[in-house]
Image 1 (cartoon, rainbow, N blue to C red):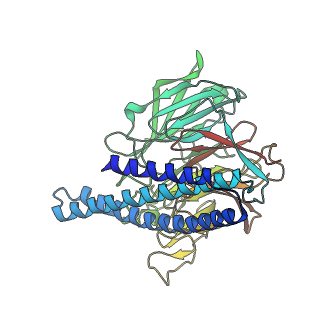
Image 2: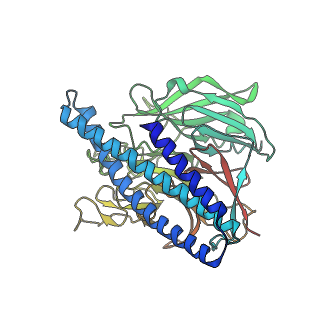
Image 3: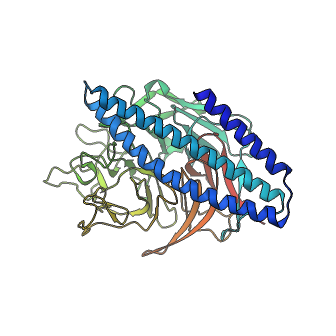
Length: 477
C-alpha cells in the first residue's frame, strides 16, 4: 500500500511538473496558475485544520489504549482507523503543498515576481555543505569562539565554525543511549551557562529512555578539547514525571538575571485531562526558574529568593515562575530589554505568543489563546494574561517560537520577534510596544520550521526539521 501511494504521488507530481514546463507564459496561463494557487492555499488550510483535529483525537485514543492494560479490541480498532485517516490526511496535505511549490516555480519562470513582503527580506541557505538529522535547536556558547551548536532530536549535539564554507561538523555530545526519541520526545533543548568560557558548564533538556520523563541535566566541556564535552559528566538537576508522551516543552534559556528558565508542557494527551497547567502543585504546564549556581537541601540547584511562590504554604512548586501553558515550543529573551517571549502550541483553534512575567497565569486549559476552552463558552477569564498575538488554525496549527532580532544585517527589523508555524510554513515578525503587538507576515514557505537560533552577533537562522538544512535571512535588494 505504501509503495502504491508513493508511486501514485511520484507520477502525479511528475506529470504536473511536465505540464507546467511545457505550458506557455501567456497572461491567460498566468491567470489560471494564480487561480490554481489560490485554490490550493484554501484547500491546504482546510486540510491542515482537519489534520490538527484528527491528530488530537488520535492522541487521545492512544493515551486511552496505553492507560488501559487490557484495552478492548474495539478501542484498538478505533485507534487504527484514526491513525490510517491521519496518515491519509498527511499524505493529501503533502501532495497539495508540493503542487503549490511547483506552481510557484512556474510562475517565477514566467517572470511572475514572488508575493511582496513588507520586510523586503529573502531567505537564503546557510552552511550549504551541512545537513543534520531532525534538528530542533541552535545555540551559540557566548564564548567569542564564533561556533554554532545544533541539537539533533536523536541525542547528538553537533558543533561547527560559523563560516559559509564550513564543510563538516564535530559531535560535541552524544547521549542518544539515554534518550527516548520519536514524536515529541528526544533531546529538545540546550543552554550554555553565562560563565561557560570559564566553567565549561552547559545544560540539556531530554526525555528519558524507559520512563519518558523530562530530565534537566548539566554537562561539562572537555578541558583538553573545546569541541568535545565529557559524556560522563552528567549531573541531573531535575526529573519531571511525564504522564503522556507528548507536550514535553523542551527549551532552556538563561535570563539576564543569570537564572535558568525551563519550558515544560502540560503533560500531554489532549485538552490537559489531568488539569496540570492550572495546578501549581505540579511542575507541568509552566515556565520554571532555578538558580544553578547554588544548591539547597536535596536539590542540585536553589530556588531564587524572588520566585513568585517561594516560601508559600499552599504546596505550590517553588520552581514555578509562570503557569497556565499547554506546550511552550521555544522561549527566548530579548537581549536588549530582557523580556521573555514564549510561543505556546494550541489545541484545536489558536496558536499564541506570550510575554512571560513572574507569577502570571496564561490560562490553559480554561482558555486557548483568547477563546474559552473549558468550558467552551462563558469561561471566567479574570486573572488570566492574554497573548500578545495569536492566529487561528486556518492559518497554521503548530507555532514555532523564535527570537527578537538584534543583529545588524537586517536593516529595519531590529526589535522584531520572528516566529513561524511548523505545519503551514508561514513566517511572521511582530513588534511589541509594551501593551500591544503589530504583526507582519513575512513569508509563506514550504519549510517545516522546527526552531530558530541566533549566532554570537545576533544574526538569525532557522532549521528545516525534515531536510536537516539551515537557513538565514538577508536583505532582498
